[in-house]
Image 1 (cartoon, rainbow, N blue to C red):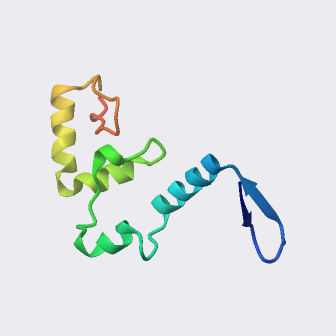
Image 2 (image 1 turned 180 degrees about the vertical axis):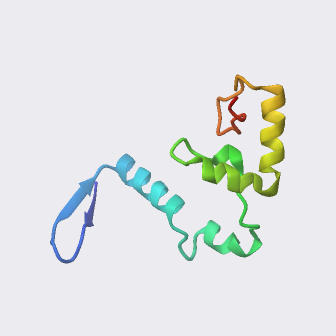
Image 3 (image 1 turned 90 degrees about the vertical axis):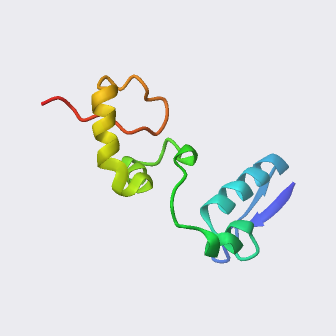
Length: 100
């Protein structure tokens, strides 16, 4: 068990089980780039791009568009031509253009 002080102003403390604490640390590490973390140290080598397979369900289509950049419109055209019914949609995919 680990006790964490929530805030200085409330004075409340929360006790977390080891698994819950590890989960919290993992989520915070993903959300924040802290000095000493590998992700923080590797930022200078990053292109700033997105790896589409790492996008989560909570992320919106804007992140998909940003990941493909200038190629997005061309990929929408291909998707519309080859998969107009959006059969291949089990990931953060590019949706085909809707029929008018």
